[in-house]
Image 1 (tube, rainbow, N blue to C red):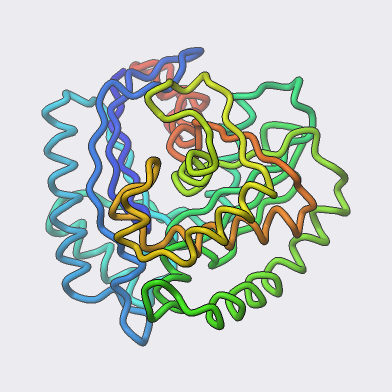
Image 2: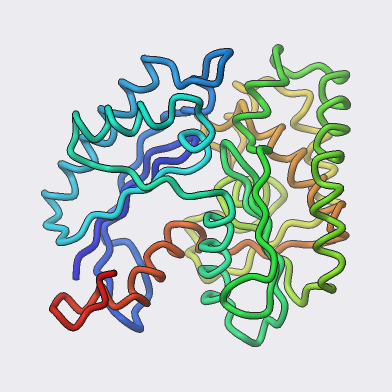
Length: 318
């Protein structure tokens, strides 16, 4: 069955078309994305600004139209941190549905972490033992750990790269004082969750998912995306510390010239790197493996596991 999956993230609206089947890899046969940066379009009261709502409506409408052109038989549309945390979230959802006919499912932070963990577990398999996963989005940081397909612990914190850039950095490049203050803030936010993670034991495999981690790995020497998903990519704590010292002194325009980082994300990579470095330090991780699968794959895998790919009355459509 052809499935359209629309991910309304804090940075990007991303549509993939997948020929989903039981036992098959959720590999996109089509891929469309549009930068939105919703988390940077919040007013002082936490509402998504009218221009942000209009941009979201347009993007969702375009994605729904593309899904129809791709002959997708099912359409899954979900939203994450920026919509989830917005004060006017319900009003935004109603307007999107009224204008486009698409009702976005808002994932909780814990659910987001759990679905991402499912994708990571399927990618690495049971032989990995306990996995600890970190995922940095535009609006939030998800952390999870476990020995099964469902994690023992799943945590979501408002430590997304776009959110922190919007809330903490006023200059380009950011002031050293602001960077140090943000470091202290991130450390304080991670202290409690880190204790819970340590209580569950050391991970056999530490993993990083998301565009932020892929960019950081590439900036520290990992293979480019053109090398394909099966090339092993890692991010080390020493390499990350050296990278932060380098990119924190550059403007966003200069960072955009570096191989491995897109222009629409270059302004927020410093905050993303600070979160990555702090999370690895808090969990005492010297190295992360970069997994090509993340939330979207987790959503698809859960959908297939529920029997929806059967395409007939035998499927469990609850």
